[in-house]
Image (cartoon, rainbow, N blue to C red; front, side):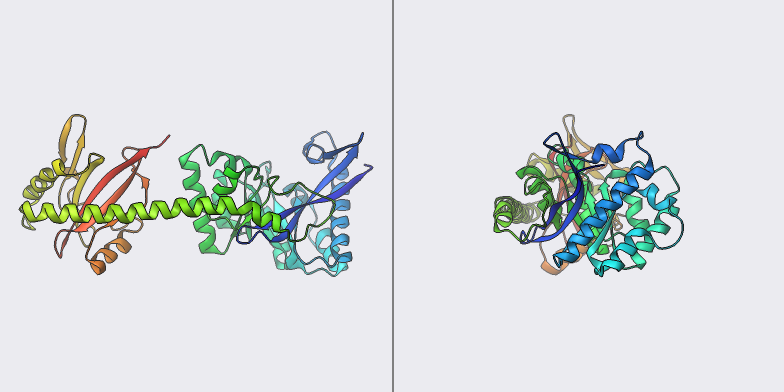
Length: 392
């Protein structure tokens, strides 16, 4: 193929807009138009040998450029899984290229896209580890919902979140929760999250909300013939999104603090007027909870009482269009295994006041809810569930 060259799209830090690396992409000039080689590499009609020849030419061109320009950033190289799996055991060409060029292998990120891979995934991962053993970094490209097990198996250095998920974040709550989970897991595991394909301010805000560290996309730059140095314009482009997310988080936290104060004062007033049942009388505890409903905000839909070990002492006292109902089958259930239960319980005991949870999905109603929890006495704690909004 003629007029084929390596182009470079910058990868930026969301913390300061600095250019931390570039992804190497193939481009071809044809009829005065610059075309992507994506269709060429995806075609089933083109022999693998021809694809390998072009790909290695692009890789070698990028590595030579990095050496010639004394490039110090990361260099992301895409390698198809079947190429890795079908290559004989031994040193891979890219490893030899890097060694011959005298580059630091820690600068090289091997991107693996597994969607179309039909072979044995463990065999693939075994061979990928040869790159890691040589000092290279590993990235999972186009990460999607069904790839969670691959994080556990491969433990990559970088996860590139698929553009389809990025675009979906503003439309579906579940997608946002999934990305937050992945980002949290990645942070705990030392994995860097990179949002790719970012084209709009909304998608950039989604990257900040999800806790991503790196970003890449047309919002900042298309692939160019040169490595791009740090550019103040990149940081300036990030500022409005970062500010919007910061203000939104502040508003949410201030709302939570105000809600805690109001609910704490309300329950303090109610407890001074409504007799509290003895510890051993679950039926009277249910009546106590039932009597509170008329005084609570309209978006409150469920009350129950637990001890400090997480054992539910009362029924669920719930309200809906039909009125108030008791659900005694929940007595005796232990909720201590739930995320944040112990942390919130200890915070309540230490602070001596109620606290509000983050929004989460109620398993029964599939709605987004929050839970306010407050000590009733030294041994019992009331839980008040509020609707936040239906999940779409």
